[in-house]
Length: 147
Length: 50
Image: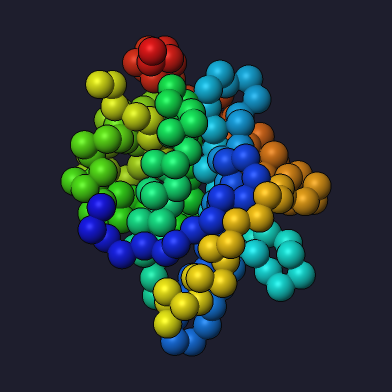
């Protein structure tokens, strides 16, 4: 993928950290893939800021001007995650409606570069369909395409 | 600058999230489960790929 992204480090199982850097600030961020109980092979993707006291916050507005770069980093961790969890499905939605809208826009932009490897679904009105641009999806599911 | 900053965390440490943070992510997974339970998932997504 040509989109600029951040280097990340895998810490523990299905957990990654990286630094979001701008001229104004540096923010420690984490991406976690957590098994969803009762859904075989399904994982929830969380993107959070790690606050100075070590707690996690997925609603904070970082406003670091690098959301596309952050999202490209998520895509890179997906590649790493799927190496170990090839048949899994990754569910994610924004922690707020505005964040979900932002994800939707970014997925539309990144889809072409990711579509060779990933199958992306959008969830709308309690049903899922293969991702199409300009649909007001509420959540997303990503898995590896079949060979 | 970005590369330099990121080098600060490229030394791999074998650590896991703390108990408190694990609870945070488990709670998020539970919210996801509640959301998924309301969705009509197509058979294609329910079936595991081999």
